[in-house]
Length: 108
Image (cartoon, rainbow, N blue to C red; front, side, top):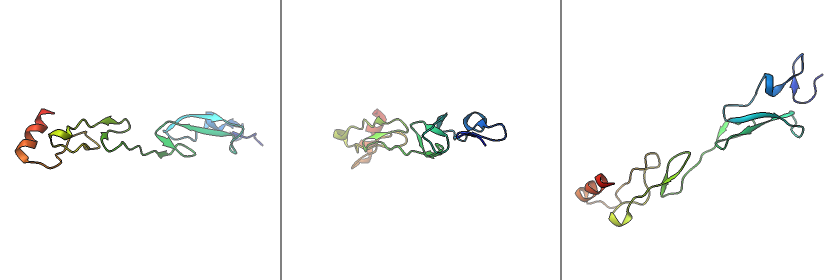
């Protein structure tokens, strides 16, 4: 019979031999406080027992990007919505006079 955190005929360490942690784990570590004898330490983008769940990180309304957020920089005083496309950072017209808005978009 193996001690906690070890498994198999030769009582190999679970972390060294089998590494049950998913790709979101920074490390698999021996832990006396864990009921399994090991823990998966997750990076900032993952959670769960095995770091198998992605953490959704959302940016505030006037910011864009993932996983790192950046400001939209859309000039509200020039007719743009202060919130931009969450994936690209592209500014959008708030209330648009099409020719004016098109010209302003090309300047950004």
